[in-house]
Amino acid sequence: MTASSFVLRTAVALALAATLAAPVHAATPPVGDAPYPGTIVLNVDATDLAQQIFRVKMTMPVQAGPLTLLYPQWLPGNHGPSGPLTQLAGLKLSAGGKPVVWTRDPVNVFAFHMDIPAGVTTLDAEYQYLSPLDGAQGRITMTDDILGVQWASMTLYPAGYNSRRITVQPNLVLPAGWNFGTALETDQRVGATVKFKPLDLDTLVDSPLFAGRYFKRIDLNPGARVPVMLNIVADSPEQLEAKPEQITLHRAMVQQAIKLFGSQHYQHYDFLFAISDEFGGIGREHHQSSENGVKPGYFTEWAKGEGGRDLLPHEYTHSWNGKFRRPAGQDVPNLNTPLQNRLLWVYEGQTQYWGGVLAARSGLVSPDYARDALAATAARYDNTRGRTWRAMQDTVNDPIINGRRPLGWGNWQRAEDYYSEGSLIWLDVDTRIRELSNERRSLDNFAKDFYSINDGSFTPAHYTFEDVVAALNKVQQYDWASFLLTRVEDIAPKAPLDGLTRAGWKLVYTDTPGGASKYADERTKSTDFSYSLGFAVKADGGVANVQWDGIAFQAGLAANSNIVAVNNRAYTPEVLKAAVKEAKGGTAPITLLVKKGKVFRTIALDYHDGLRYPHLERIPGTKDRLDTILRAVK
Ligand SMILES: [Zn+2]
Image 1 (cartoon, rainbow, N blue to C red):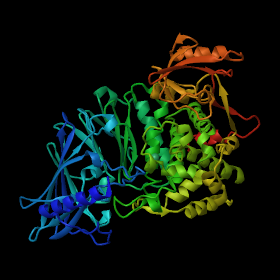
Image 2: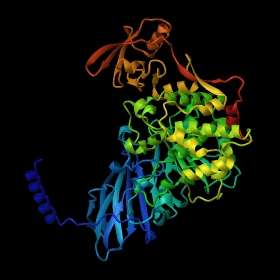
Image 3: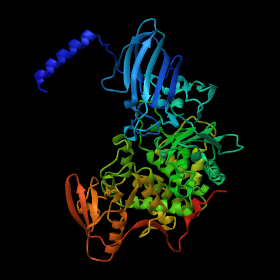
Image 4: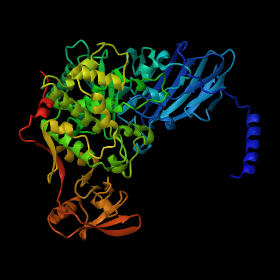
């Protein structure tokens, strides 16, 4: 656009604005301390299963003058500004039956400004939350058999107030005959309409609800003062059928967690658990509940599912780490204030560690599987070429930078490595405490000291890096600050595998995939050659995860290619595996016919080391600390 046309267009725009008399507003008000006067009533109709539309009516007490409503942007547990604003539609505001005009803030698109006319005391808002119809549009939260209510997605709230000081009374209309699980307290249920007790907005958005046509509730803490419930919804009734021995393992997980953390920071805890092909997969922590979504077969194809069984212990651990004890920068005054991610390697990294440990201690996974999973993690980070330019600490920014979109060169870009590389660092800490204390103390002592304060309280207790270091020093004197900072903040081409060594195990590669490798292949519907040829490949030949600087990378392969043939034979995963085996110890290269767009190319992979999959192997003559860590606590 030229300068002169800009002036002309601006003049036209100003004239148009004047004729429409669009209101002029001050900026969004800063968050104050006063309570919001009155109670906001939020009515959600969740009965339109055919079109997956949540219809919302909200009434809120207001005063005359300028008002800004916010749609939640920074949702706790999302680690990024991911409020699903695209799915909010049909916003109409009125007062006493007359329309109230809203304008969107030109800078902050999550803010809606309006003027409340004199004499008006109640504002009515009507809008829809449109569940994505396809996974590519976002997280599907309504199907014909299951629905999830994330209150943050359904709510507008007044700017200028701390979200703990805004009172909301939610009501929900469910499809007839459905049941639900939630941490919310029900006031009354009449037929399909549920009236919940009023509560603060912060706790409301932290208390989602799963409802289903097929529903089962299992008590995971029977006879205890503080209930822990598994609320299961599924695509079909047979998916709900947990066998007694499976329930026993989940109960053991709850017991192991309570023993580890020595406290419970909830009045009752509700696992919301969806087993579905259609409802969006999820693992999201809340203080008194968690949202968990897995594929069908969790109970019915038990033998195949070990890899998914650290999900519930991971999300449960968050009740202590992430929700009750929370990095100071993760507790902000309202849902549109940026969260600070610096300590996510504690919040998520240590939770990832305890999730795996609790899965093993409870028997949800076998020690064999737990070791395979650790081998897979160790191999992944040992082969992450992006380590040479980017510190693990910097990956805490990825939920903001990338929002979990797929990556073309993930091995080079790095992505949210604070989870699993974080867990390797906590294994390092755990084994170091064990070694220094002559096996008398461990990270279990840290967990009990750190998370058991104020038993029964669910007011967040903040932590800083210095608090973590001080708590470690209380368990075992050491220079923990340097120990952690070196591993977290330094550019480190080698993965932090000292913990593995100190646990008595080393990372090796063999030609047979372990349990975790097999599970990952099944889950991603691909065959992994990451540690041999340097990529993974789908059944249709689609290339994924090309390892930066690996054999295939050097031959010019990129992830948006398809392998058509291997050594002049039509590609199947088996043909490629056979070619890798055949080339072992020889000199002839493996040739791939590759299609990228409209271009076919032949590439030669000069690779002769055979198939390679990660495993752990005992270091002879050392103490098996891993065995101790993974064993149930009496
Ligand atoms: Zn987590």
